[in-house]
Image (cartoon, rainbow, N blue to C red; front, side, top):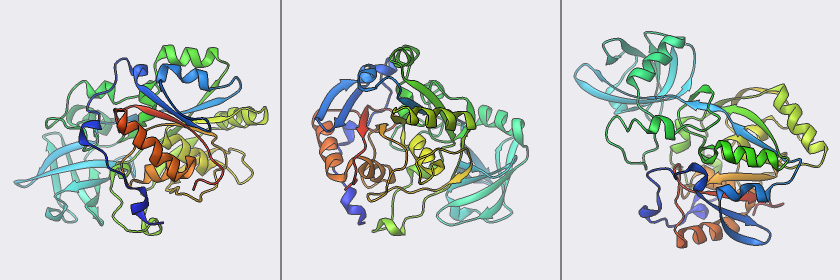
Length: 347
């Protein structure tokens, strides 16, 4: 499909720079067969049924943005995929200054060697420490990898270390937050559970590739970056049991949806999963397992807007986004949310 089919105009003032407070006070646009409804996230339980199962991503964002020097030249890197205890793929700026074997010094006690150099500014870094020691060094010297449309001073704001983590953040490894999960609070979770809705967790370590623009004219030519994910046997059992009893699968965020669809068989059964996924969902994709999706509002011509167009229809999504813009919803990572029901054709 032509990428231009997923374009729309978004005024810059609609891009949220800070999260809603309280988190569950964000607005919620409900898009279903009955049209559009303007609500708040705290109203979410009204649209769920006893026996449904909500699936959350429990990945934890690490301070993956580092600034350092190769000799006298300044270098900024954003880690995006772990390749080993001491190795990470990263996007570097300016990458043209780097070659294989170069040393980058990020702090007196933290440095890395360029082990490989790839395309489009990507490098593989081998650090001088590994495992927990490397994670501790990132906590000390790294900055939270907020997307470029959230404007921050160099080094970021300390409060983003809390506000850019979800209530479920448990397993370190993401370099971008699963932002639909940012809206959840303990009181909202209790209301969901009181409604008789089950919950389950998966892990998808979101990579910085989620922010990369689509630079091709046709979706067939776009390459997704792989991300590591896990679906446990317990989660698979919970989801399969709920479906067998007539419950719906509600994915919280596109990351949860992408992993569930990667782990589901053509028979609609969810299986344990421990692997990379580079699934790219565009209109025409036949969904195997997810019935509803709660997600934030996404960038024009992005892979995520293509995904929601596949899930709920391209024209309905363009209409919903036009409504959200006209009614001053807040967009992107720190913005408001929408609740979508799956259509049959996704056209």
